[in-house]
Length: 230
Ligand code: Y39
Ligand code: FE
Ligand code: FE
Ligand code: FE
Image (tube, rainbow, N blue to C red; front, side, top):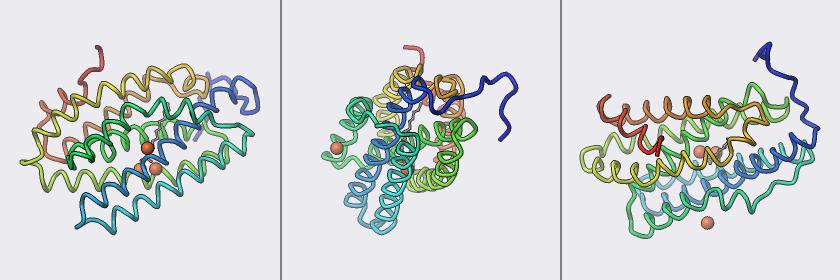
């Protein structure tokens, strides 16, 4: 993709860039690691989709390896402690839902919210990434659309009995996403990823997903903006 004319040249070797990358790269590595574990857990909970979910979990492991290579390529050590704290609230909510057998909540957290977050982040990153990371990320983002599709198809097929749990899970988890975005806003900007663009892309992906599952326009507008200002 063409560099915007008013975009200052990014220096991928600069200490400022590498410092921000140590956190963003760690978030992505941790996210892929947790996504791997989450799909294995979903494979346990949804035995009729076991083989497909195990296949998705293996894709997440490959993504993790790819992003670890991106960090090594820039000679950056990922700050995994930061990344674990970053994901802790969503991670805890997923674990709790899984322990209670709440498959719909687990799917909303991983296959809708986290996948839409990943798709938004990777779409915004690709045009401003270094050449090595861009090639890796282009391959990964295609997979993430297929993970989102798994969640959409399952929830569409079980829409009527899932609707109330989806609303409640959205209410508990979407505000966490806005907090997560705020907490990396400065680092993302250092990588030339603007928060406004991330929010916009997330809302488009998430709103489309809710629409595909069966929510009306009115419902999905309310759901996808929940907690964004407070
Ligand atoms: O399904 C997946 O592979 C998702 C786990 C990966 C999440 C990646 C989260 C990226 C957030 C980056 C924020 C940058 C501003
Ligand atoms: Fe864990
Ligand atoms: Fe992934
Ligand atoms: Fe994924």
